[in-house]
Length: 302
Ligand SMILES: [Fe+2]
Image (cartoon, rainbow, N blue to C red; front, side, top):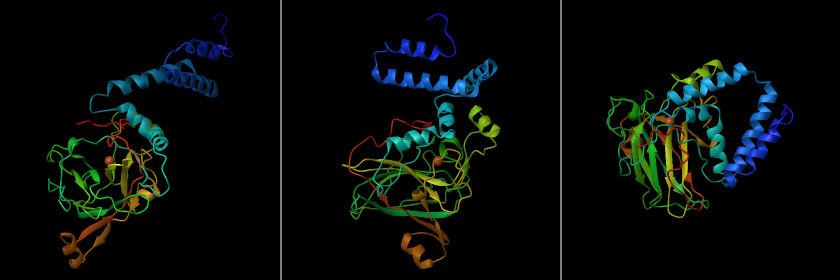
């Protein structure tokens, strides 16, 4: 432990970790230390830069509270959240892919019936009907599957950060009918910015990156005997599909929100004209799991 040099200090620190009892903690610490030291060597980290990193992380902590999770926002914008999500959700090709939970999920959204309108705030967005079927890997419809749905207004605001909207606006939980089908009336989702008034936003700016997410609707779909999927369906044609600030877009999750003037179709869906129609079928794989994942990317909680 004396005469430590840049060549042997890593080995000396790892030897100290060797007596850690918790095997998973030990595995993580060994990897963190190995990679941290390798990173410092790789960039020849200077003392000033080390202090700057400490200052930055202090600011990340200072702006965080029960509703603002800046560390997770940082994780989102550095692609760590979607990487962890992908590793946790390796699926058969036919199953619906997962995506980030995002910071605006709230548990216990109102229970709604198929066909109900979830824009309870009359927010002036373009009327949109969202429908489809929940199926298993063989294509068999799953009746009674639960869909937990939430989205922002067409102005890009979730109700829990917008005092003008009623509580729980644009949120709802509904079950598929006897044919495994679901239907909800809502408004067209639009692209929106993630918070840029903290250190995560400053870092985006330093990297000449924008803070926008493409328009999307969030879903958690679950059913007895199946592994739940937390995912998002994105608006085809959105300007930010290829540069989502949190890397959540997957090609299989992009869907057309078709604009229709058809009076006949509008009547069929119980919609005014014109309206948008989005169809998305969810495919669940057999298994089990918590419908509300413990790893929540900055969840605003209840
Ligand atoms: Fe979102």
